[in-house]
Length: 109
Image (tube, rainbow, N blue to C red; front, side, top):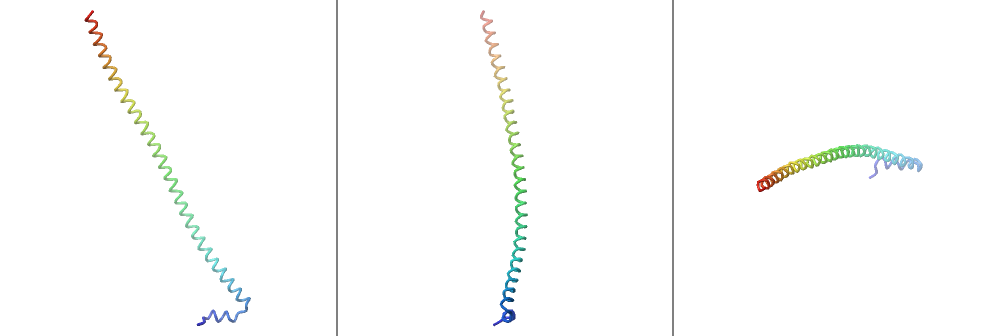
């Protein structure tokens, strides 16, 4: 079964057939080019979204790192204050014991 196009092509000269094939291929290439151009634009938007998300996550990471460092410093200060208070209590206890010893020695003389 021949189609109209097949019958039409039969009556074309070889040069006309080549031109028709060439025109068809150029049209197909232009269609493919437009498809690829749209796909490229879509991929660029996807990449831009990904890059923006990376920037946001990097900012969150930097903020979390700063928060961690501040918390670590606060914890070290808290421990130092606690150690300082404990050291004061021990020194006061030692001073009381020394005073008792001095009192006992003073009474013995």
